[in-house]
Length: 360
Image (tube, rainbow, N blue to C red):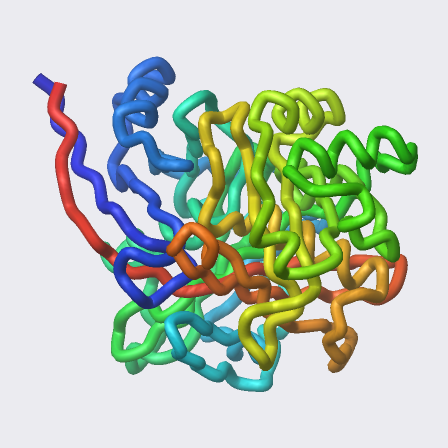
């Protein structure tokens, strides 16, 4: 008989039963691919993560030469968490580029990410939640005094990327991940195709935001980004799951990310988003870090973020999950400008809600 323990968290929130649920198996050595897939189906969450030992002989995923950083790091700039009325301000210093010690950084752990339907190469909330768990379990070195930042490198399906973990009182406070290169892979400019996409969301073409393009974009996981004119129209989306799944898979995306630049909260929020992935048995995702990173880059790339650039970085929040009673707030830090994106970072907190064990 085999026993594998797991931790379940809610990610991109500090409130239990909000954010996006995630199951993490911190010690998954020995599980086969088939067993991982069966367990992910059993957990039946949008993603389940299996953590394996690291392998440093990998390629950086963001197109930059991988480096290993000294500790401690300075704090991430103006990232904030907002949810259930809570606002936690972050410091105004960005994590600085520290001197390279190695061209092959030590990969602390390898993450395999599964939906209930398949393994995927990259996702946002699984990374943020998993490193919150691993930090709690002592895998991540704690800064001196229990306060500050630690940078590690991990391996996901798209390669090796850095992750920054902020500690307060010796415990993880937030996790910030660097995503892959921003890419525009496809664009829908045909009027009839746009109308079909709107219809798959239960909307009219006239309710789309025509000032922005409908595109397939990625910072590691592809999504079909669909700008909606108003928050009310976004709220009242009624998805035709079969039609939407056919459209976004045909266009080469893994889901549809509909959004409006109108937001629920006043402050740092610059978009409210909904993510639908019916082809993966995900009717609606409460918080999608990978798609949020790509959406943040898309907004900056198109000069539509509405946030001020400070030192070449644009920082803001994307809201998600409110219309399915799982409010999530995703922190964006995009280095770039109109037409040119250099780096995308996504962060937020997590809260543990359950511990368990799978026995088979």
